[in-house]
Length: 341
Image 1 (cartoon, rainbow, N blue to C red):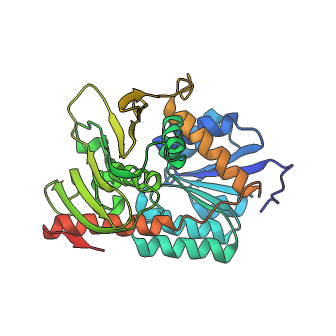
Image 2: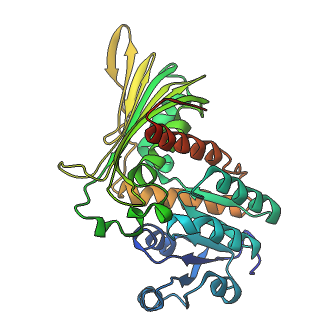
Image 3: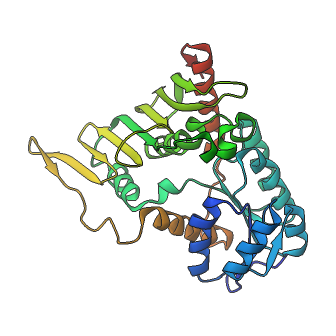
């Protein structure tokens, strides 16, 4: 594997040539300084070769082991279906590559733990793409909270709704063995991560959930909601849906504090001043750049700084706790009862 020094370009390979690789990672990587996108891998060889030719990427492979052996990469981006994440992470780490993986790290909390141990064993950086944390509006809200300006957090409501008319549009996401569970895993997981992160990583004690499942063997949820009670932090309510009928895709995060409130999409911040609610929304918190692309660009900058040793990034151990909460959500829905963690 190529050596990694602050002065050398990092050789990057992408595993999985689907939509997230094409619309999120590749546009950002092509514009970042200090990186060289040298290889792409996909089980569909024709797809990998066509994408490589179109993007001017030197190497096209059909197997991750080929990419790792012949691509000479420093960094691997994993954009494969969820059930392949863990094995692909471990393979890349064992080959000496740093890893940025699309969420989730693994389908289970035990799988996340195994991936973290592999990163520690091979002394490489493992980062999961929770890009919502890097949005400018989220960063603005986090700044108010970190400064104590909104007081103690009482409640957080969050969710992500989209409309997908047919299961054919979902592909592997509609198959439980490959996706891990449907809309709550696909859309609820990143919003739950965001709520826990911005809420200061509180300890979740109780979970109550309702999930509406598709029919047949290996059913996944198309819509769902969960209520989390925390020992040392806010109550959290999260929703996810693939069946949203509305003007368009809808994501939200609403934070209720003892001294104010904040929300995203759009960004709004209110504080109580002299007994009156006052709009203190920062005017410079948004840019012309698409929020989705900007979040990935910021996340890549953070990840690369960690790889180069320019900042100290904590291992994503919070993802073990996140998957335990998600497992409790599915168990609560399945058993139709409150689950204690």
